[in-house]
Image (cartoon, rainbow, N blue to C red):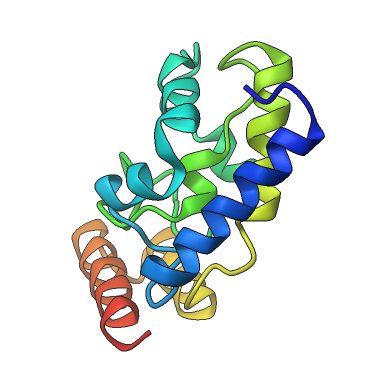
Amino acid sequence: MFRDQNEKNLYVRAVWKKLESRYLRYYPFLTESEFRDLFGARVIEVIESFDCRNEGCGQCDFEIDCPYYSPMLDRCGIDPYKPVHCRLWHCYDCGPEPLIKQIRELTGIFSDQLGPETEARRIKDGLEGERISRDEAERRFQQLIEQFRDTA
């Protein structure tokens, strides 16, 4: 993906510049099209080339301790505003190790915040403790992220 550290540094600077000029207001919760625009063809092509044998296993969500994912949901609780770190992170079963390592490095660079994580964990805990239904959890997750994007 990157030939050397210099090429990676140039790419990272360009993404930060675009992020600060267009997306910082509601980062890290981007739609698919916002994510594609921010990270560009190079990263998108690599991510789309990955093919995880364990699709839907949730292991990646556990590895990054995602507050928006629960095994009680069929998918991320905040689609279509999946956080940047979730869109980037992939397990080593998804593709060649050198590419996964580079993508994970980008994840570390661009995952400084998780937005309203405390409230998200309350929703997740309510779902997993069976105090709220799956539909209610999805509704609350969606409302939380839309409110964050509106006020960020």
